[in-house]
Image (cartoon, rainbow, N blue to C red):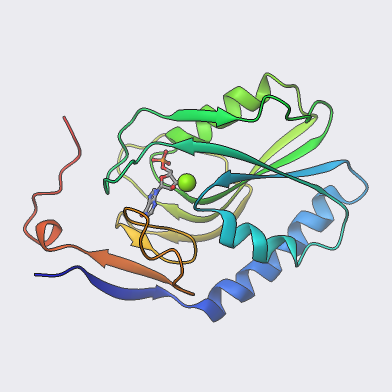
Length: 185
Ligand code: IMP
Ligand code: MG
């Protein structure tokens, strides 16, 4: 049986929510030296739309983190590949993620970036997936809460597919329906 996609969050819903997030960001960071730090690759679509709604000045930069490889469960090991030339000391930094799942990626990134002594570090995630047992996280700018399901679209992929979908969809895989997609032990 082939993978199935079920619509979860529409492009119009995303657009409306992003406008609200951008306003929140403007009112929190107006007058500050602001850096938008995009977590590659999944957040690139979200960041591209978000930044075009933000009317205060900012610097754009990128970091890479990966914990999934080609699976639908976080591997638990986060690989960081941040740019050694990142210049965020004394700046307000907003870390932009597509989706927070276990929180491992964002926590590891925040710790690494904290060593560079930004004046302020906030997290902006389009989607927060609620996973049983995950540690609580402070996501100041959050688009949507979703249950613990694998989603694709709007930048998010499964094995590099589906990033180009304009909305967010559940990915239903036959083996998931048969209960065999348990986290690695
Ligand atoms: P975490 O470290 O478990 O919070 O995983 C966060 C990262 O895993 C995100 O940056 C995404 O790239 C990826 N991810 C988590 N859940 C999904 C999903 O449902 N679909 C696609 N990517 C996901
Ligand atoms: Mg990611």
